[in-house]
Image (cartoon, rainbow, N blue to C red):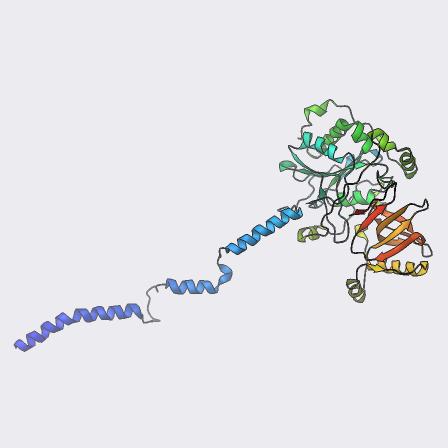
Length: 443
């Protein structure tokens, strides 16, 4: 009897530890039961592992090297002068009824709804004599609401010089959709003595800017020099047309209206050049060169914006006759495209036979590549030119028409029998013109 009691006591003492052992076993190795209605416990380690497999759905903090790379890219953008807009901007005003192209000041407006082209900083062309001074005056009166730039440019593509406003006015805050190209026109170049800004010569340029959402205002250099405050008042009036709530600066309200000036033709410009008309009213003896060197070509944002320009010039009298170099459509077969992509640079034409020269140039026209050559005009003045050839005046003509990088003339004419040292597809755009001394300008 005593033995039975001892066995019972030992059993009671041992049953609790055994139960604890079983509980611990099932905690470590749970047995799945498909019939069970209990809520399964998530294993946090397993959940983390599965989350790592779905890497597309989780956020990963960038490494230090990635952060450094982003910083480097931002610094590079700053160095390249790229100005990027966060979102696409469009012209949100219509002042087309006020355009003027009959005399100075010339005023051209984009059409409402046109996308606005972004810009970079860094100028390639030489600045005009009055540009810096007039820019400072614009900053004085308009700098609070607008950014005033003397080095803005609109890149097009590699190998083609950008379009550069003489002075760019970029709106801030409520004026953010206002982009104005201010041009100061002279009748001839101070250094090269080329006749410029003659009637009709600037329509391609005007059409490009208005087609890209920019207002164009052209003053003559004489107006800017002799009536600066009047020019500023006129500019304030343009801004008020765009934004009626804009208040014209008090200092300009009582200024007289700007006196108009007739546009000049080549005859008048030639006469002024011989008389040194500019030098006389500016009170100087001669002009000097300041050279610039900038990057060409477009980034991804600019390429997206750089679609063919659809003419949006609202001057009904002229819009049908406007031709833009950017709209020139050249269609090639796949075989021709393959050949064009393989065209080497700096191909020298080693012949004086005008018929062979013409054949080479016709090839350059069809291939959409530039040519470079030494030239001597009818007065014996020598120059180096880079030209984007467009066409010959007629099938039998020796007169070549093209865009001249030196004068920015979209349809400059050159006789091929006066050309020497012709290069097809030059790697550099170089221009210079002989005067009293020899100047070389690498653009």
